[in-house]
Structures are given as structure tokens and as C-alpha cells.
Length: 256
Image (tube, rainbow, N blue to C red):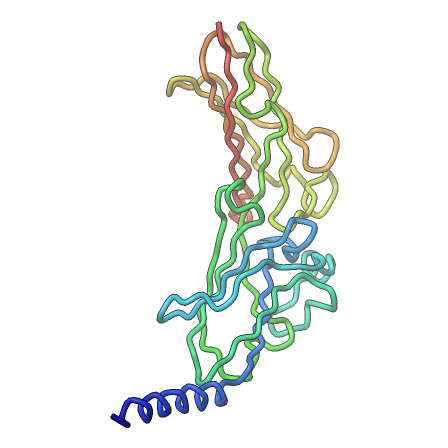
């Protein structure tokens, strides 16, 4: 009759001992846009998930918060991972987890506005030791590829009563850090391939390059919708040098 209380006491003692042995361990994750700067407040912050690699258990979630960092150090004259390239206030996600022993940890990163921009993501796995922050002063830096492409015109599911009609296309395009695409700037649009394509009922209607819209990040095109149909419009951005790419889709409808 006395065995169950003793067993319960033993289990409670073991749990307390395990908790007492756990060491709070800080993990700092930073997200660097490929060919750009840190992903932080200007872009809306990258999503972060930290997991136990073996079990899949989620240990922490959130997003990066802070500035996009020093342009010269990150984009003009980038340094190696061993150099200090980040400073106070630069974008980061910080979590403290309790570790009793070395543990394989996976950091997963996702683009700002993950659903809207097509799901650019990356992950990295490494051993983390109790009380030892991975990757020193810069934190655990992961690189996020791609462009964020957002339609401005036509509005999603826009309808007009009758064709033919000239349809303007306008898109806002930035790197994952929110870094601006501007003529003569570090991220000059002339380096990128920005195009649109239009189809209806599975058949091509129009395609061509988008032109720079005269202000940072804006790109323009147009096509003629000849008659009644739902037109699928796709805008793509591609950097041949880095491999960055981005896509946005919308529809336009002519009723008659």
C-alpha cells in the first residue's frame, strides 16, 4: 500500500533534479537576404521556428525584429561569417531554452508575409551545447533567397463589363530585406529580369518585360484583354547573378 506514494515521490524527485540540471541557453537567429541585408522591421520581419531536430518539438517561435543593418558591411563590402557584421539594434530573434545536455537544434526561417509571397524559406541544423550560444557574436545567421513581389495593378479579381480593354500591370518588387531596387543604386533593376505573362483558359495571351516605373521598386507593363475571359497574370523577378527569384499572381476578368 505504501509503494505508490514512494514511487510518486521518486518520480517527482527525478523531475526536479532534471529541471535543476537544465542550463538556460540563449539562441540568437539572424536572417540575411541573399545579396542583401538583414531581414527585419523594414520588411516586416522573417518568421522563425526553433525545433528539437530529433523529436520535432517546437522550442520557440517568433520573428526577427530590428534594423536591416549596415549597408556597407552587409552589401557593399561583405565580410566573412567570422567577422562582426552586426551591431546593436540590428534585426534578430532571441530565444532562451533550457538544455540539460547537447541537443541537435533546427532553425527554420520563412519570408515576411509567407503566404502572400510564395513561401521562400530555409533551415539549418547544428548541435547546441548547454549554456553555449551558437555562432558567437553574430548569432546564427541563415540566408533567405528571393524577391518579394506584390501586385499593385490590377486589383485582385478586378472585373470590367466589356472588352477589348487595355489592362495596366504594376508591381512592387524588393529583396527579402526590403532593400530598394532603384536605377543607379546598389540593387539596380538593370541587373534583373522582370517580366509578366498573361493567359486565359490555359492559352497564352501576352508576355514581355516590365519597365522601371520611375521610382524605387515600381515596375510597369500592360496588355490588351480582347474579350470575355478570366485572365491569369503572373509577374516574375530573377537575378541571374545570385539566383534570387520571386513570383506574384493575380486575375482580371472581362464579363462580355
